[in-house]
Image (cartoon, rainbow, N blue to C red; front, side, top):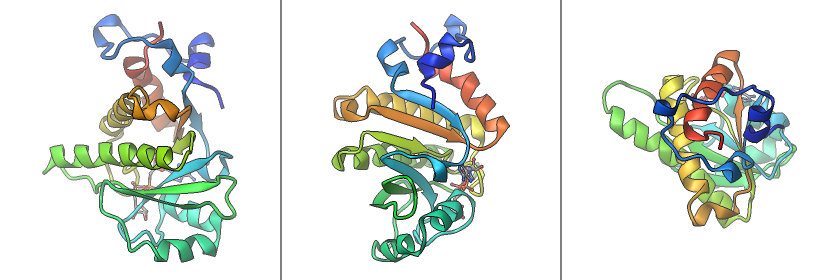
Length: 205
Ligand code: AR6
């Protein structure tokens, strides 16, 4: 799985026009972030994040795929967690997954009312997931595009929140221990959105 630094070297990512660059260039960050198109249940890593619902008892989308691949022991552990609030995260083992842990986070169901609140909740999913990773000495984390499937969050807005929140966290003092964040996208459209926005949040030097 390639880092963003390699994407720039291979000209897969175009440098953003200066006016659009919102964040300062920092070459060290480019080595800590990746974009990968594929199935998150196949990623061999310390922790994958699950786009769950408040029950934490499984569902469709990436949640269904993770439970199916992890096996029934994941469900058994999730049952003991008593659910999870929107914007919060809880951790379990990975069972039959190649990933050692699953960080279950509950994204907001999108609506155009309460836009501000939805944005804060989505940002909180990324932040609380990374906080849990740090607390559990997890250094490598893979995220799916939370809330942008069944929960209908618009992909461009959601991707901006994902990139902004992850950047802020990994460059904070508490986030220094996070060595790698992988954004896992499923569709070509989502991949294109990430490729177009990454240069704004992680510009090359
Ligand atoms: N690997 C990576 N990404 C995937 C995979 C996969 N195997 N499968 C789907 N995606 P969604 P949400 C992408 O709907 O919007 C469940 O029922 C998908 O294309 O899984 O947060 C839960 O129980 C999309 O880009 O999650 C909740 O009730 C992204 O993952 C509800 O859905 C997220 O889509 C949560 O909805």
